[in-house]
Image 1 (spheres, rainbow, N blue to C red):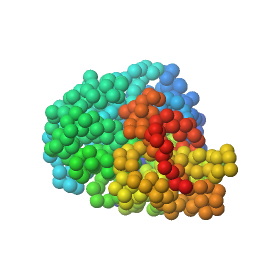
Image 2: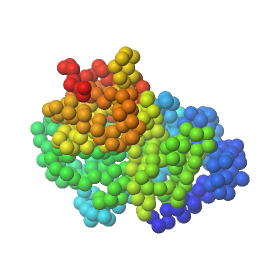
Image 3: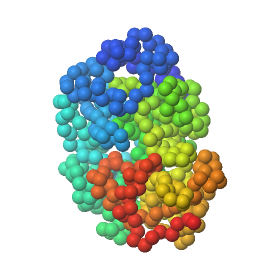
Image 4: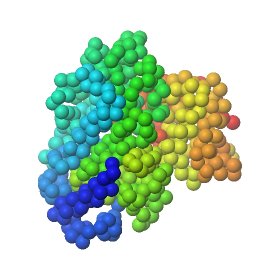
Length: 483
């Protein structure tokens, strides 16, 4: 990683050189770009909506639009504001998605000396590998696309079968996955934590056993997509012991980082894989001309919005994630939230990292296991003060919910000074907890057609849409709340 900054400079120059010949490059005067400062002047930060005009041209069969030639795939993903997104994947960018996953496993083997898991069966809980064609370009979920590129030497060890992976209904698919894996020698299990938990629950329901007793050689849990901490305690309880985990940070737009150490915090930034990174301080992102930092300019423990330019033809693209560096040698980061997933209904700007830490600290102290949760503002229309409303599905409900809520509130006040000021100033009353039914979040996700795959529940909303929908799955008895 001593070469990380040099690698980034090299990638930047290669991207600009190739982009010169594209429609996007000509429109943005790539011929004048020699430095990062030139790039900032010529290429503004964009979100997907701003790219749609170029994506439409690709769908019409036009080439050399964002990158040379045509994309070899569109990764189809659902956005919170843009509806369905079609993210281009090119011949040059596909190795980023494939090789980074391989590198994560190789780093784990090299650091720990453990490689026996490679001899057993491995499962990747993913979307369907069936692809449709959009504008003649094969299109599907990223996990389904990647499934077509699993190395041959892993194919014989990979589960579930192609036919089972193609089942669209998640509950039917999950049942078939359990059928196929129950008697197998599973050594590695990979997926998004809430969907891994559903797989474990189904296995336990079928057998009455812990996962370690069903799969004695199960050694590695590979996970990503959401913060692992809120799910870790329950997953390990289901397994029946702690095992090694490898965290990944993939997205349709690129595979950005992976856990390279079992001992050090954070994920190693993927600095030499066709992606050039910029980092915008969170407080700058809404400005007309926000400060855009390169890798060599970042600082520890500051929240940045992640901006990428890549050999998939994405230029100064706002991923929508916020990250924080926990090491600069090597460059390791943690994902702290989503730019649009926050609560600032009262000026507090509470982010995902803060609510997760506030809840997990209180839960750990009381040995409480949380299945899933989300938070929304509740703006009072009466004399009662407004508050943050937490919807929590517990594995085991706290004996004194009022005291538990008070502890979570205290933890959040310590994490966010603006929230603390609002409580002190009597603008907000302390948070309230709504207890969800068992499988309440699963039933909600099912009701909106987002059960399984890469879908996840947002941690935070700045409006009441999700909160209003979740009231259909509250526990029948009114939850005790903090007074």
